[in-house]
Length: 420
Image (cartoon, rainbow, N blue to C red; front, top):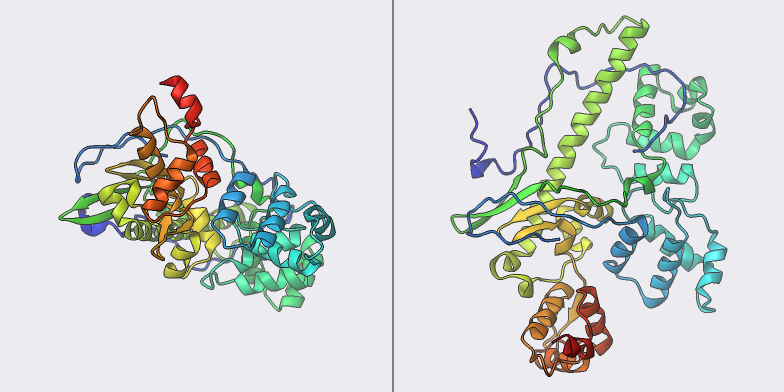
């Protein structure tokens, strides 16, 4: 019997598949291309090696909040950021861009910005998570999602060709035209259609603005023999397999309605398990990379947090930034210092006087520490805090100090003095 607590098992993904062929011809009923699709920190725990499985409340996040967060972690020039903000403001709850490029250009109101710059920024926003966001129509939405899939998806290129070049036949559900144009047999076409149906035609709905009542960590981080370990939560990554008796009932040559339905279900199960395997592997790789980047945080706390943006992790893991964003959203890491959303470990860079960089999270922690140690009858002003940070080699403007202070719900110095 495998020991689930063995640290050597951290990188194992506990998903199984039994009696299930890799490639199963699938028929489908041509009803619609899409059916209805609706597709922070807790209290610290004691000890380096302890596992105290805590939960906490978390506030909801809107689609716009999620996009703005990614924008802030993306290197934009001031002009491009203004365009990105206008684009995000024009995205509806389903994730579609509802304003024309000309309207966005007019709203930015900068005579030096041209239409091609707006389109270039749009393409960058379309690389954000959720995949397919900021598309101008369904065809573009599907293309964005397909292009972000890895080459491991067998029918990716055929699906791209179908959506890009033959969308009319797809929209009309014209099986004969699609088979003729793509030179595919019926089973191959059904596999392509299955991949397209797995996409989300309303990507914005995947970002739910609601607060979960209970948070279950996706991974556990703990110290073992002076090494930081990352382990998937077994409850969040259940073992799945297809019932062998059920799979054995399927007869390949039988085209009866019941058999076709069973084949469809088996194919969907195969796709689901494969997707879950990929999801869990990506989750573990991203979590491991975060722990590696932020090792000083786990050792010393917030003040040791390093600047980290999505691109840093994406480049190391050779993944798309939108994939990293998706994995870090509403995914939680239980650590000896508390339970945190993956997003917590990402923050922008602030230059230091020595030519290095500090993270916004570390600077917020320093500001909180300075305010916590101030004299009640003589609280520190934002200017004074900026001066103290400058003495420590961290150059931030007074308004930046004010922004960080307000983000921690700390009142200004005159109110702190009154409250003392």
